[in-house]
Length: 341
Image (cartoon, rainbow, N blue to C red; front, side):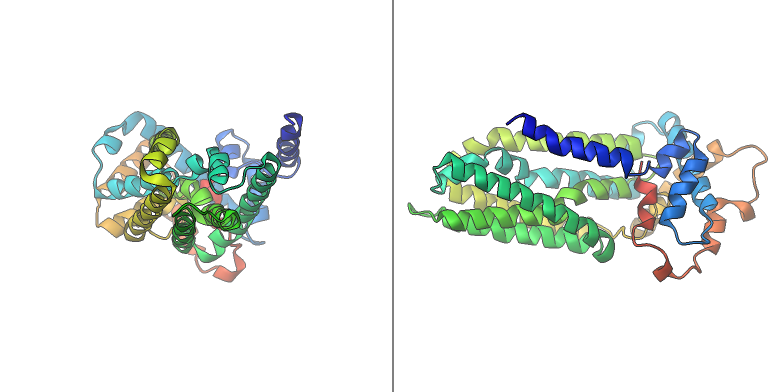
């Protein structure tokens, strides 16, 4: 049984080694720019000047290195309005992924099935396999929809669907008679809608919204808070369920999903089609905060070479001249190259 668990990871390792290309950002950071150009040429349309992208990635990496030494933790602990909005969105999304109860429900799924009336271990194992495959399949659907429909619609749809699923499960546990099939359908809907948005989106959005000046530290905080929230949810799951009843517990999770939906609706901007290097300007425009641009400009001056290239030759200026490239000729996933760190 344990050996069977090694099959899928082995397949994924093989595919990652043979099929998946290295991140252009990682290749540039290791001085392998020629290899990065080859990968970028596969992503962008023929004739697109990918050398400009490489130069932007290099500048972004240099700013990150400078930020590690120059900015420190002040931007995280005492943020300006724009940085505060970034941190609220990024860290809030990471925390929201766990407070909706995903880890707790998955860890104690056997308990839930048992309470719903499914006592057979074989039946429980079959249902677990089915639910796992369903959750995996929805990840592929989400991967396509995130770049075609945008981040906000997928996150809202995910949370709304999870709310409905949790309400169905809650209703099923009211009273003494529980419908096992109804419970399985509710759990299947919950896991499907989670994988459609909150699952991958809670890692995609933080990686996109944090500017290069705070990205490393902010991602560390977001990951830490994600695991703290997950630990609290799983460690209190059975105690809360016993205190509120199973119906009350799932009703509580449905309310939490609605709160997360309201939070993202009010604060989450659409990041589809925006490069990592452009997020500072984006959040400065949203919040009207110029300080974030001042920090980025200071870091840019610190990392620029004395007597460097003129403004007319800068990657940002050259990239701006390429905006005339028709949008329909650029692959849908081309804009996320900057997040492939």
